[in-house]
Length: 123
Image 1 (spheres, rainbow, N blue to C red):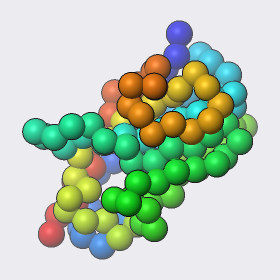
Image 2 (image 1 turned 45 degrees about the horizontal axis):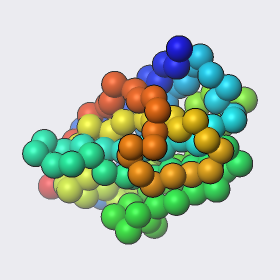
Image 3 (image 1 turned 90 degrees about the horizontal axis):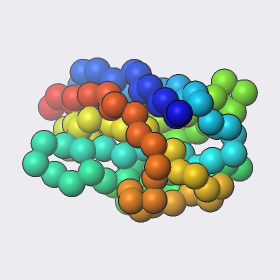
Image 4 (image 1 turned 30 degrees about the vertical axis):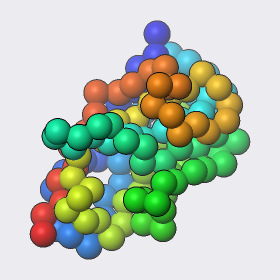
């Protein structure tokens, strides 16, 4: 019933910026927490950022200060602004929805996932 569609990935040089978008449908988007996760080849999927229904955010050390998560409830859209990109940021980035209001850092607590968008950062 829920569809999440990511867009905005691509190739960028180290130090550059990208903005990812996630369009949501099928649920009351404004009611639920959202998150961005990423997965590089041979690595575990990891948290990038998460945001509550009210807009409260959490970032792990790997992205804090460089990435910004935001939501536009009127447009049913989640965003990830990525600045000062590094080659180690290269991964497939996934949008996810959790059936709860508060942000959550645990991958297993998210109920719906998009198909992902590739981000490649060259050195």
